[in-house]
Every structure is written in structure tokens, then in C-alpha cells.
Image 1 (cartoon, one colour):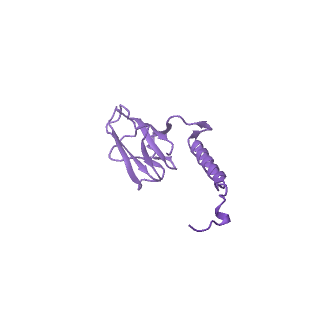
Image 2 (image 1 turned 90 degrees about the vertical axis):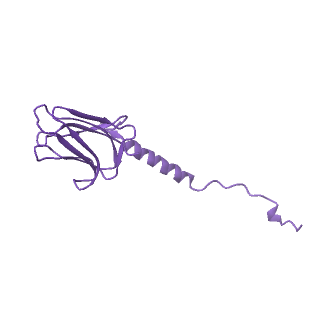
Image 3 (image 1 turned 30 degrees about the horizontal axis):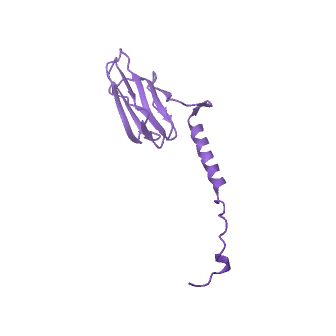
Length: 149
């Protein structure tokens, strides 16, 4: 065996982990962003957020402009209608975006679907396209949105 060097005889105390305050701050910011993303009017969103769709003029809408989840829908077509309603849910800002779901509602009927807790994630917002022409009817109802996960 060789000689012990004097520096080898003492073991320095462990240094505190670097950056722990920064990591805690980043975690806090991420949690706060999550909480704010899932509030409506400052109230924590505990369920789905309804967004009205359809109208007398057959309005197509952007139900969401940010990432989120489609967790359900409820639509109805008037008993006076003679043709079905067709609704496309698209991941994006317009009718050219990717189709994520399609719903056909017969006259005088309703279509309800609950997909929670998971739902269908969308990345670029949710565009609800109510197809028109060829005598298609306009549904009345709502889509139900969950926060991004």
C-alpha cells in the first residue's frame, strides 16, 4: 500500500444540491398555470365547460382557441326538420383542420356522448363545423370541454 495523502484523510461534508430553489419555483409556476388554465371566471373548473353550438343561422364556431379535451356533446335537431344535421369536430382553426369526430343527428332526435374523464385531446383549438347545404338541418346544443392535461 502506498502512503496516505493528508487530503485523502478527510472527507468534505456534502454540498447542498444546486438549483433546488429554481426547481421548486418552476414546479410552482407549472401548477399555477394548470390551475389557471382550468378556471372559468376565477372559479376552479371541476367538471366540463359547456360551449353552445348551433343557432338559427347555422353558425360554425371555434369552441376553443387553445389545446384541450373534447369530453362530450349534446345536440338536438328540431322535430320540424326533414333532413339530418352533420357536425364535424376539427383540431384547428377552420374547416381545413384535422377531423377528430363526426356526428349525425336525425330529425327530431338528439345525440349525446360523454367521453370523460379522458376525452379526445386537441392541440390547435377546437373548430365545430356545422355542415350546410343539401337540406341539412342545424342542430342546437353544446360541446363539453375539459382542460388540457
